[in-house]
Length: 273
Image 1 (cartoon, rainbow, N blue to C red):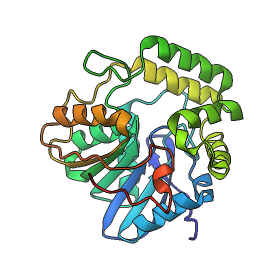
Image 2 (image 1 turned 180 degrees about the vertical axis):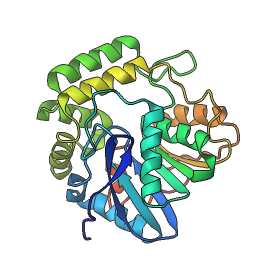
Image 3 (image 1 turned 60 degrees about the horizontal axis):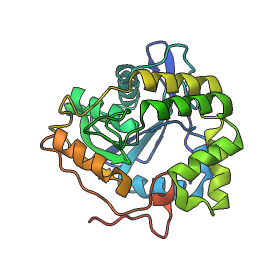
Image 4 (image 1 turned 90 degrees about the vertical axis):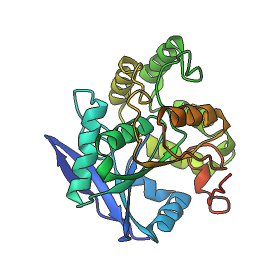
């Protein structure tokens, strides 16, 4: 597969890097959950295979969030509203009037808020391992506590970018990939340039300040269709979001947890349950 050229959309004074593959009738926008980098993603064969499958029936639009990857670095930590403007700027640049949003983890909050704000531009949501809020609450007990957040931010400050730290993240996010040396090597080379240590620390601080943010409150997505792909650990998140969003159709898909496992060519076509 030929690697697409990197383009840039203007969102205020910030340049947002993006790529486009395929020319199908459906637009799919891939908004990253945490961080990544557009060029190095093409070095992992199973991810390329996955995008090739999407390309057979859609136009796939992928972007690096501001402050990460090939997009401009920023001094001010962006809000969800600012990131919504970035997403809209990329869609405008490629003349996408309506798209399916595909994202994971904290990116689910961005996609959900975008869908609530621009329902006419949102064809649906595909949320992988989604989170509705960042801090533990009585009705959301599986999110990190304040003490756990403080420990994580201290770890990011001291160790972000090191092979040891990135592999520890991989072991937490994707324990079934511990023996896959190809994937482990790619993950480190992909994540290290995606965000600097300072940017990662600032992102962590922003997330901590916005921990009470809970996208279940606006009853987002009442008029769009949603799909969730999540492991058992997130099943309660899925049910919680489904209840909060009223009419949203939410389905659990079989699959191994996060970070590339669902891209394995021999088991990547998840089954509905």
